[in-house]
Every structure is written in structure tokens, then in C-alpha cells.
Length: 380
Image (cartoon, rainbow, N blue to C red):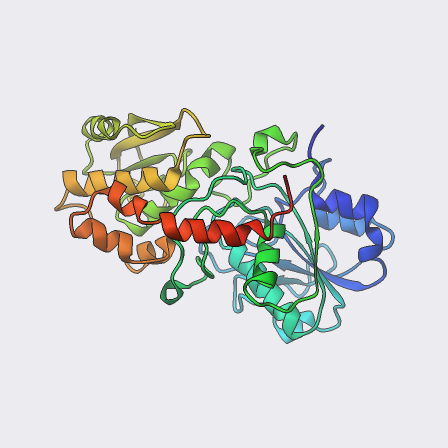
């Protein structure tokens, strides 16, 4: 049986939770129900629901803005409701935005990665709701890259930013509903929270096993294959290498004009990482780093997603490229450290440590997080 997202469960079984109260909806175009109707339209069609305001995270309520592009609020919109941007002048709901609302509904598709900014938006929404004593309903959705694998170092407080809001690993293995429970129960946000779980989803399921259609959660993740690699290859943003933005295969290719793809692919094959293979590639980004220039590099091809550890892959890839091209490679700081959540991996690599040694050092923190995470899980 296909999985039903939380919005369908809410409207079909728990409509009394939202009936009659002026509500604000935090969502975007990727939030659709099982019939591919957007959440905003599904709520507008429901007789007992009173939508009063809309809120859009990064990329905007319509999901069209590029990464990092500022989005302005729209006091008047074609939907007949104000659309407040949470990626513009303010990244938190303000008192003016929340005026007159008695309820907030949050329905945003995540990708299971700490530095995907929808995670921080969820935290900020819960904090604002707590300050104004407004209850929040989170309509849950599957973690598209499964909910069992956790990977990467825990973020340290001094590296908190909009791309990393607190002590969790890069790949946390939680859904948005479970993240909301983590923020409430372990991070001390005293918010009136209700999570409406998905029906039929299990932790080990990947998105293409849910029966739901993939709708890109942001412009640079057009396919599930991009999302499988994203927890690792997004770290390439913190270097002078291209991570494939501006190509048809974002986060699936890595390179630069000074990289020899044959040489790099052979070096990566010698590392012998599970679940991944490397093919020499040449690509020309239309935008972002090295726009309009031919880049040599590799295309990453997932061979076994169960064994794949994308953060491990990316750190090894960076380590190999640094060793092959010491004069050309450069970090983009502080961005790399903010994505990683700590400067320790970079400093270890610069001191000559092997990537495997760096990765092994994350084990104690991951064990601690796994114990905390167990207390908020909603799915078998």
C-alpha cells in the first residue's frame, strides 16, 4: 500500500485539529498530497479550514527561487492570502506576521540533512510559536533517504548558522515530525506541538518505495538520485570545486577546470568505498562556480544505497583532490566549516590525517545522538 503523507491523514481523520481557527500555513510547492494536490489547495478546499496566512521557506512558497536567493513577502497574492517570506528580511515569523493566527500548520518536505535550511526554519517557527503561545501542527512526510542511517560529526555551538541550528549529525535519519519532537523534548522549546504522522511509512523505506511521486523539494534536487548524494557532495560547496550546480546532474558530478577526470577516478577507485563508483566526466556549469568553463572531474554513481555513506565519500574525495592538486585546491571558509558543523575535520586533513581516521572519530558523538534520537522516533 502506498504511504499517505501527514496532510492526508490530517484532512481525512483529524480535521477537528484545525477546524474553525484562523491558521497560518508554512509550506511550499513540493508539499503535495497523495493525489498531487498541493497542501495549500487541499486545505483551501476543506470546508472546516480557515487559512489566514501563508509562509514560505528558502526558495519561496512557490519553490522557484535559487539557493541563497532572497525572497520578498507578498502582502497580496494570487491565492488571496498574504505570503510571508521566511527567507527575506526575516527568517523567523515576526509578531506582525503572526497577528490574528490561532494555529500554525507546518508541511514541508525535508531531505534528511542538517544543513538543508528547512530544518532551521522548522526550529525558528516552533520558537516563534512558543513565544506567542500559538499551537503548531506538523504534517509529517517521509525522510526520502531512509530513516535508519546517521552520519557525520555533531555540530558544535560555535558553528551554528542557518545551515546548522544545533547538535545533530549531517545525516540525522529523522522526519520533520521527529525533528519537531527533538526540538521540543530535548532542545527545550515549550511549544504546544502536535505531529500528524504519515500512514504506512517505515524507517527503512526510501522515497521510491513509498508510492508517492517525487516533487523536487528545491530546484537543485530534481531527482531522488541527487538527494542520495546530497548529504556528502553539498560539502563540496565549501571548496573551490564545482558540485554540479548549474548542470543537469547537481551533486552527482564534482570537478574543476584543473582536474583530470581519468586520474581522479582511478585514485578514487583505489580508495574502494562501498556503494559508489566513479566515472571520469567533463561538464560545463551554466551557473555557480566555474560557470561557462569546462571542468574535468568525476560522476558519482550509486551502486548500493544501503551501503553508501555520502559524507564519507565526500570527505575522501576532498582528501584525494587536495593531495593530487595541492596548489589548485582551496577551501571556501567559513562555509565549509559551517556545513560540516565543526572545523576539526578540515584541520585534521590539513595536518595530514587520513580521511578514514577523521571519520572514525565521529563514532562516540553519533552513539550519543542515536540514544537521544531514539526518544523521538515515530515509526518502526
